[in-house]
Length: 165
Length: 332
Image (cartoon, rainbow over all chains, first blue to last red):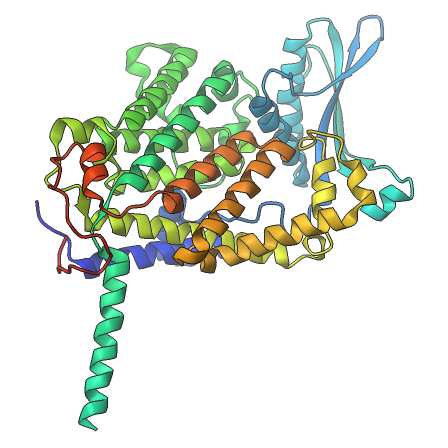
């Protein structure tokens, strides 16, 4: 088998780690011309373009999803996408709420429609589903000591009737 | 004058020798093997946990009604691209998704036992990437790290130790320069990721005064225990936050010297255990534990007795080199 000269290996690794550094610094290559696009694709496929800003620098609020289910007798129950089946599944499902942070009405509507359809399937007795995206705003330690509780602010709401889109 | 030139040349030669030893001194593939096995096992358990949801998350009539596929702008394969390629099998959408899931699990199992290691890593990486992109809104940090390190496993000689490949095909030497080089690239990547994470955290006041931990522990999707009592002991929260900053920012320096490595490794492992327990990020905690332990907690130095056992080589056939930098060659 042919050997690879060390200087080539060092060059390739240095280039790869440069992309890692650019990704970590949140500097996208996608818009840097055609070569930038190719390099961006490489960063995507290798994971070199990943950012690492978990819980940084601030994490004060979080979006949540709630579904109001209204049956034929007008009774209302509220549920969530999470089923309690496993922590990993529920954790991932809770991330869907973050999709409502983007101020794109068409996309929000399409997602709300898909989620309402999911709720109708899961709850055959439901006649109407209200999809509610809400912002959970946490409180500081001082606010908590002073008796304040987290605030919940509506971000998006849409009502669906069974059989409609 | 002549002496200073000679001194300069000697310094250059020493630096070159040190860099060469750091990157290429022959090493066993034990850390790479531990990473390979640990990562594959964590992903197998994760796949078992997510199995009941697979068809629902990726089918056109499922959770996102096809929106999940279109949500990510990034380049890469999607489940439905692969299903189109498998249409000649006549499996249908649900059957096709199950076949892709089974192929992913089979690739991870082969990766864990180290049979056809590079091919298994390639298939696992590609299918993991496909699933990750196809349900983009459901993803989080664990997927990113898995994607990065599955990619590395295609290129590094992770099958040279603790593997069926090593048992069946008996490599000529248990220690190679490529094992050291691959390990170094992954170690440097890890150090960059902690440095970037630490710098971003340190740029906000919430990590310095301890507010972030208190707030994060109250978030609906992270709340595992009632930690509201922390508000009455803010020093605990502040200590935990500043401690996290010190560990993450110091990682890129203190994980390298032998004197501080154990302390820093213990600190970072404790941090990830804490994240897993208190924020409920179990798989993220597990994967970060595996990566850190494999990359910095398992010695790559050749030890003839253990190298022979792990690599399936004859005792004494491995390199007698016990310290980096004792041998140098120009090609791998």
